[in-house]
Length: 197
Image (cartoon, rainbow, N blue to C red; front, side):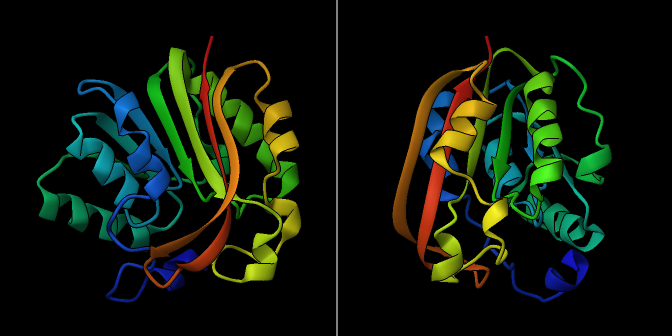
C-alpha cells in the first residue's frame, strides 16, 4: 500500500519537516545519533541530518526510501536508510540520543505497545523520544491519517505508555497543517516529548 502511495512524483507529505519536529530543534545537538521511525519519503530524517545529527531512518516502503535517498542527496546530507518492517525492527538497547516517530498511526493497538517499548529501549539514558500524531477526533476531520480511531493517541494513553520516562511535553491541540496532499487542513494533534531516565 505504501509503495503505491509514494509512487507519485510529488512527495505525499511534502519535503519540509513536521512542524512539531521543527519546534524541537533546541533539543537537537550536532553529533547526536537519531533514529527516524517509519520515515517514509525522508522529510524528517533529512531535517535531523541537516542539523548535524547522525541519522538512521527506517521505513517499510522501498519506494519511499528511494525518494528519501534522492531528497538527502539533493540536500547534501548522508543518512543510513534501511528498508525494514517496524514490527521486526531490532530495537538495539541504548543506541540513540533521539528517536523521532511522526504520524506512525498505521499501527494497530495490538502492535503499538511493542513498538513503544522498542523505542524506549533503543534510547540511551538521557535521550529524547519525540512522538507526534493524531487524536481520535482526527477521523472526523478527515484531513490525514487512517480512518481508525483506535490507532490514534489520547493524553491518557501516552501518559500511561511513557510513565517510566520524564514527560517534558504532552500537549493536545488542533492546528492547520499543510504537509503535501497527505496531511492538509485542520488536524487534531498530540505531541509527546519524553526523556529517558
